[in-house]
Length: 524
Image 1: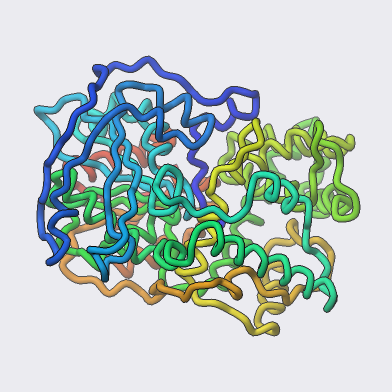
Image 2: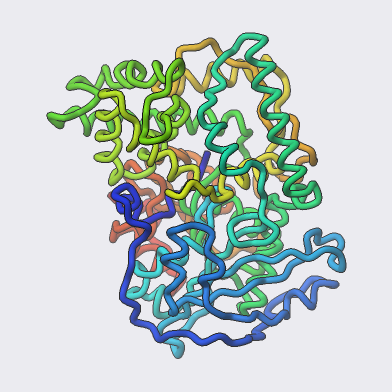
């Protein structure tokens, strides 16, 4: 999965805290109605959406997680619902709502406009991301000159209706099932389970909603939001999957773009299998970097030799296939153990927690690794799940071309194991089809290379050691969009506004003054 670690305070989550808190410097906001649109071009038949009134008020009722319930108490934030048609081909039909969170610019007389942001996924909450990034931005030009706006794409988070497939109890049970049996009987059982999952998505969400949660619909919502906020042109920050939203928007509405940073790019011209294999290689590269860091410590759970780290991790993790270990009143499965490692590889500040979790596993305990996996799946301490994984599946199943050829699937699994041996469970390659093969609605996405003209200069940021979105994908996206490429030399997923002054200042200068960094700029 390509998703940004949106919780800036993830380490506090591991220690039991719900979220970071800050002392707001902006004034408390009062509820008010605002009609700022329409702004810029308005497609025929959509006038009432582009010029709609937004009713801004407190954000507490929009919270969908414990972290949100804490962060959204901040009265310097305000929230509203944007009304959009479920199907843009039938604008007079069923309407849905998009959750929107805004932190207004602290110096209104110098305000440039709105900065819309999406943190990735698909499935991650833009409202949560905007609230989390607020403290990092409040003393920068982005905080003083832009309204920081996060939105939950259709079907996600606070947007209504939300995609829902499994109950909280069903998710707990599903995570204990590793689906590792490649035999004909095991394959049939796996496919029975994913077919059942697809059926529950259709039953609990509705096929009309599932058919319209893809990126092609999301970018139309973004344009409605741009106009309703009163911005003639869009200023956008997209991370990870958010780069797919950005590139699709740039292709559909090139004349409506003011500036766009795309960080941690997904290559729109790459098929799903090649993307998955390259991502596996990226996680292996990040695991190897973690291993080199770890083996320099006396307490490294993987031993003193980095060349043995993959084998030592397999030795720790593979027994979980037969017998999960205790993790408080729950159990840690093989799937959760590998998911925990993947989660921790997104950012180097998670490596100490990962090493401690692996030390616990060596002692027959899985509590910390399960906490890391819970963070990945959006499970709160009270056992409730966000819909991040259900939404991820729903979006990808309508965005990407489906693969149903069993030999192609078996070869893809073999290639993935070869690219990421630390994730190899030791079983033969599997040919089971995934839930998308049984999805109840057709594909609506466009995976062809963007065909754009008339775009202003854009900025693509790509990280050399990004585990989830490989560096080369950013290079290819920059070429396709004729954008400037900024290279960050590091091992983490995405780079902008994560504490590297070279990257941060280049991005801030671009968004505020439209000044691109010099060709070939590299930051470390």
